[in-house]
Amino acid sequence: MYSLFFNLVLRRLPAEMVHHVAFWFLRAAMGFPFVGWCVKRLLEPSDPVLRVHALGLDFPSPIGLAAGFDKNALSPAALAGLGFGFIEVGTLTGQPQPGNPQPRLFRLSADRALINRMGFNNDGAQAAAARLATRGVGVVGGNIGKTKVVAEDDAISDYVISATALAPVVDYMVVNVSSPNTPGLRNLQAVEKLSPLLQAVRKALDAASPTRRVPLLVKIAPDLSDADVDAVADMSLELGLDGIIATNTTISREGLQTPPEQVAAMGAGGLSGAPVKNKAIEVLRRLKARTQDKMVLVAAGGIETADDVYERIKAGATLVQIYTGFIYHGPLLPYRLNRGLAQRLRAQRGQS
Ligand SMILES: Cc1cc2nc3c(=O)[nH]c(=O)nc-3n(C[C@H](O)[C@H](O)[C@H](O)COP(=O)(O)O)c2cc1C
Image (cartoon, rainbow, N blue to C red; front, top):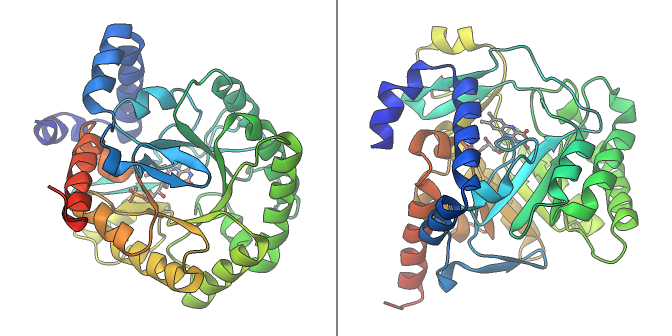
C-alpha cells in the first residue's frame, strides 16, 4: 500500500517537503497518548532475540535510524515508536545554520536512491541539547559536524562546542567527517587531522559528562581508499575509540539506472540507498578484518531488507542504520526488518 501511495502521490511532490510533512504528521499522531501507545505496542521491538548490548548500552533491536532524518532532535521518541532500536540525531553543528539553498534533495526512484546536498541545515547543538534534556527513554546518539563558516583549521573548537552541549543528553556521540556537502569536511578523515579532533572531542565528553562515559564513534565515507580505511581503523584502535560507522553517502555516480542527464541535472551531493550497498559492505568487511572484535562496527548504506541486515551482521556489524530504505519502503519498514531479522537469528541459533 505504501509503494502505491509513494508512486502515485509522494514521488510527485518535492522530496524535502514530503519529509517535513511526513515527520510533522508522525509527531502529531504520536502526540495523542492513545495513538502513541497503540503504535508502540504494535511496532516496538519486544522479541528478546533482537536485544543487543553494545557500547555499554542496551538496544531493544540492532536496527536504528541513521543521522540526517531527525537533524534537530525534534522527536526521537516518535521515530523509536515505529520500531527503531535507536535513533541518531544530527548532524548538529556548533552554530545554527540554514544549509544549502533548495532544492537540495532529489529522488532517483529507478535506483531506490537519493542525492542530497542538505549542507547540515540545523538549529545548532545547543538547541538540540535543550530538546533532548526532556526526551525520555530509548537509545539516542548525537552526530556532530563542522559549522560551514568555521575554517577547517578551527574545526576542533567547533566540534568541541557541540560535544560539550550534547554529552549530558545523548547515549553515544558520533564525529561525522564524511558528509560531502560541507567544503573541506572530508579532509578531516586524514588521520593526522582526525586523531587530534577525536582526542579533543573525547576530552570534551569526559569534562561535560564526568560520571557517565559517553561512547565515541567516527563515521566514515564509502569513498575512502583501502589504505585510508586501514589507517582510520588503526588510529581508532590506538585512541581507544568505541566504534566506527560505515558508511555515509558516496560522491560516486556509478552503476545508476537513472538516465545520466537527469543525474547530472541534480548536481552535487551525496548518493545514498541501494547503489551504495556493495561499497558499504566492502568497507565494513575491511574494518572487521582490521579491528577484529575490538570495536563496535555500525553498518549503514543501502540496507532495505532483513537479508541486508543479516548480511551486515554476519559481515561484522553489531548495529545497523537505515535512512533511504525508510523513505522508499515506508514507516512499517523497521517493524518488518525486526520481524525478519528475528526469524533469521532464531534459525541461525537452531530455535523455532
Ligand atoms: C537526506 C539525507 C540527509 C543526511 N544527513 C546526514 C547527516 O546530517 N549526517 C550524517 O552523518 N549522515 C547523513 N546522511 C547519511 C545517512 O545517515 C546514511 O549514512 C547514508 O544515507 C547511507 O544510508 P542509506 O543508504 O540507508 O541512506 C543523510 C542521508 C540523507 C539521504
